[in-house]
Structures are given as structure tokens and as C-alpha cells.
Amino acid sequence: MWSKNVSFDGGALHLSGISAAHLAKEFGTPAFFLDEDAYRSRALAWQHGLQAEFGAQAGTIYYAAKSFICTAVAQWIAEIGVGIDVCTGGELAAALAGGINPQKIELHGNNKSLSEIDRAVSAGVKTIVMDSLFEIERVAAAAKKHGVRQAVMLRLTPGIEAHTHEKISTAHEDVKFGFSIASGAAWTAVEAVAQHPELELRGVHCHIGSQIFGSEAHEIATDRLMAFMAKYRDVYGTELPELDLGGGFGIAYVAGDVTVEPADVLPQIHAAVKQACATHNLAMPLVSLEPGRNIVGPTMFTLYEVGTVKDVVIDGGKVRKYVSVDGGMSDNIRPSLYDAQYSAVIAQRKSSAPLQLSRLVGKHCETGDIIINDLQLPSDIAPGDLIATPATGAYGRSMASNYNHVPRPPVIAVNNGKARVIVRRENEADLLALDVKE
Ligand SMILES: *Cc1c(COP(=O)(O)O)cnc(C)c1O
Image (tube, protein in one colour):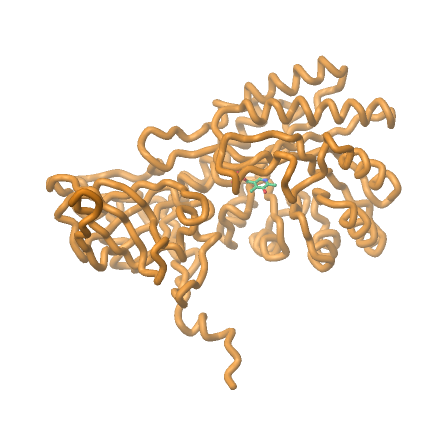
């Protein structure tokens, strides 16, 4: 659950040798701390893993920006040389601000605006992934306007129930994303793209969901997408050169979970692609993936300060200790949104007090503002203690809100014993800056 440069010296958490107490004193709480070295190594492990597994047919690792992006991280991505998947104008702006080569950028989204499409085409992004017939017309019009031939992929729905929470499962039939293979919509989309000489159909894409373990779902998706590529070859006489199987690789949030590593899934995915090539007599396509959570998730923890503790008598006379911290659903909405599980430790000291049934809650005016529903914490936990929750890098800061007019926490990158702000803390002036005074 903890990133590679986290250690517990004398029971106190340290990141790259800097203690939690020191980090809290210098940067305040709540705050996200990012293990830069871990981030870079996870991104590189996917990149090198894909290259080692697929050789000349290795496509691109597109880091999913929505899991967490800021200008500094975009700069690291540019330096490392992996690609990026963006799905809004804002994410595109961050990618470009970080100096990422547009030829490493892929644009997603089920309702890209006309201006987002226009900016992506004029910036020269590598691929736009089509999600509706309207969009095919819109991208073709933008390509014509800018006098370019735009490479596109089709997002397909292979009809898979991934074993994950319903709200992060994206490739069963009844979803807003993509063109269904089963219903014929996907084929209609192929024919629509073929009407436009300004569009170059590069291949097919799917993203089956998030926080998925094992490679089975990706293997089934491979079969269905490649059967579709074979149909394309049969009708058009040429093969589509690219296959993009999306992201979704799971990570550990609580003890007993295991983070998926590239080597755990790439050989199986490769075998599934090879098998489908043999079945359909297709050449090996370029294979790309879009891990988001799996790269950034394990590399950050959130540091909070305990403000109050309260023993509450619950069913059967049991007592539950409510531990309130200075953040909550505004910096981690995932427990409320998808019953996501997290773990927590006291970060600045060791405690040998007996463990007590506890609930870690935030400061928002909402009963459901719960970070961890049930956990065991030392019974001597008290105001002023620091709490660290690991694996908050993905969909934490990126889904943060200003609920209750709470300023969003900063992100601090820590590397080689040095810590620096890469996203500063919001302040009340930021919150009021949008208001128009009567
Ligand atoms: C969200 C998303 C991803 C990344 O998902 P993770 O579970 O974070 O790996 C990749 N591709 C697309 C199209 C997405 O929507």
C-alpha cells in the first residue's frame, strides 16, 4: 500500500527520509504527498514492460490524466516519454503546459465540445477516440477546417461485466460510452468514418472499467475487438494497425490487497492478442494501454490532523470511536461515491495502546462524510495526532471539490530527501475569486 520510499522509523512515517511531523509542519494538513521516484518508476515499468513484451508492436502507454494531472506531472511524463490520455480541454491544457508532445496525446470523452475538438485537432494530437456518430462529423469538420488528416480510433463496447464496482465498470452494454459491437452500432461507426477522407481510422479501443484484478477481462475484450478487426479486414481489404485496450489495472488499498504489476498482466494480454491474430489470420497490431490509477495511485498518501475524537455507543452497548480529521469527502470522495476502502495509520508516533473499533470521518456537514467506515485504531488517538491514508494518488486530488467552501489541499512532491509544492494549497481568496459582488 505504501510507495517505495516510505519507511516507518521508530513507528513514525517518513517519505524519502522526511518525517510526517516535519512534512505537516512545513506544508500543513490536509495535504497529498507524492513519491516522485515511485511515480517515475511505475510509469517506466509500464513503458519498458510493454516494449519488452511486444517489441516492435509495442504501441504507447497513455497515462490517464484524469487519475491525477498537474503541470509538473505532465513535465515528468514528457521527460519519461510515455503518452497521455486526456478527456477534456482542461486536461489537454495541462498536458500541453507540461510540454508533452501532441503526438503523444490521445483525446477521449463521450461528449467532447466543439471547442475541445477544435483545440485538439489544431494542436495536432495523435489520436481522437470517437464515441458517437455526431462526433465523427464534428472531428471531420475540424480536420477539414485545419487542412489535416486526423487519426482516429473507435471506442467499442465489447459487452463485458468487469468484476468491479458498477459505477467504475464501463464496458457492459447499458452504458453511455462507446459503440456497441453486439448491436451493430460499431459497424455503423466504421462506415461513417469511411465517408470522410479527412479521417484516418487507426484502430479500435475499449476501456472495460477500473480497479480490475487479473487479465481475464482484458483478454476477453481482446478477443471481441480483434474479431471486429477481422471483419473490417474482410470488408475493406486492409488491416487496422492499432489496438488500445484501455486501463483499469487495480491497486492495493487495504492489507491483503495486491497491486497489479505490468509483468502480472502483459504476458497474458500478449498471448490473447497472438491467439486472436492466429484465429483470424491478422498481423500483430500495435498494442497500447492506458493505466491511470495503477501508476499514480500507490505513489501518494494523504496526511490529515486529528481535530476531535468522540466515543459513541452503538448497537449492543459497543463503543465506536469517531476520529475527525481536517479534510474528508472534499479531498477523497471515493468512499462515499463507490464504497471504496482505505486504510490509515497514526503517522508521527508509535502507539502500543490497545486497538479500538473506530470510524475515520471528515469535517464536512454530512453524515456520509466518511473516509474509513470501520477500522481499528489505537485507543489513545488524540487531537493533534497525524493520520496518513496510503494509496490516495488516483482520483483523490483529481476529484476534490470545494464542498463547504473548504480549500482543496496541495500536492507536495518528495524526492531524494527534498520536498516541494507542485500544486499549491487553495486559499479563501481563491474561493471568493469567482464570486461577483452585488
Ligand atoms: C478512466 C480511464 C482510464 C484509466 O483508468 P484506470 O482505472 O485509472 O487505469 C483509461 N482509459 C479511459 C478511456 C478511461 O476513461
